[in-house]
Amino acid sequence: MTESVPMATIPLFRDNPYLRSAEATVLAVNDRGGIVVDRSVFYPTGGGQPGDTGVLLLADGRALAIAATVKGEAPDEIVLVPAAGQALPAVGDAVEMRLDWERRHRHMRMHSCMHLLSALLPYPVTGGQVAADKGRLDFDMGQAPPDKAELTDALNALVAADDAVTTEWITDAELAAKPELVKTMAVKPPSGSGRVRLVRIAGRDLQPCGGTHVAHTGEIGPVVVAKMESKGRQNRRVTIAFAEPGEGAA
Ligand SMILES: [Zn+2]
Image 1 (cartoon, helix red, strand yellow):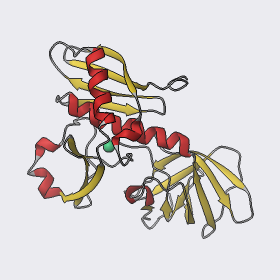
Image 2: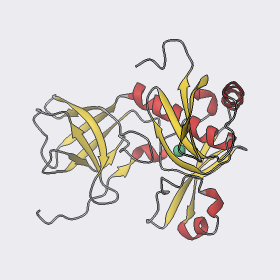
Image 3: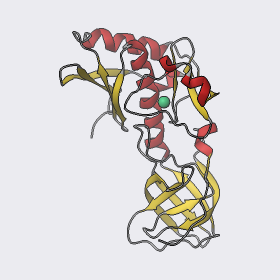
Image 4: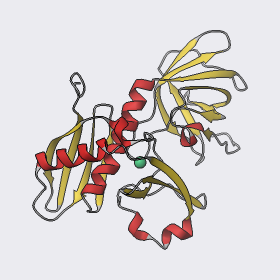
């Protein structure tokens, strides 16, 4: 390993999750072919949300397919991972990032829906995962599971309420003083930088989260409780899918 200065990527998606494209400069190309950029519209895999895919337009007009986005070795470093077999840009090159927006927007919708689900089922969350067609949370319920049809109706009522989804910041110390905010035991809130971002769904939910969300819950669209499974003695896995015709397939 060569010595390297820790690099930071400005996470443009954090303040504006609706940004679909932006220009950036290549800070480094690591020995696995990953491209570190100085700012990113691509969200890196984390907190149960998949990393983004899309295209990187190079100055010479070539379009590089980006197959994945991950966090780098430095805490604030974001690495775009090109599909194999493509010529890579050089350090210092100007590039334009273009998201696979349709996929990301589905992640935003389903991720926001997971917040509503956790508001309806006030149990500790032991795991979770979002995908473009569905999402799931594992709850430490320790009792009879809720009724699927009733939970579907309750979830869709919260979607239809079209409540605002906003973000705010608190310090690590403030969060430590309010442990009840942390519902997810499996996914640690993004901390260590001295402050933690909270995601608020007006009147419904407030919890630390570093993912991308829609601005209003109505944007999630109709959903359905697709599955309710037992995972061990205490744990129940609740899987949600989009309900629109043509959605949820795959
Ligand atoms: Zn979230």
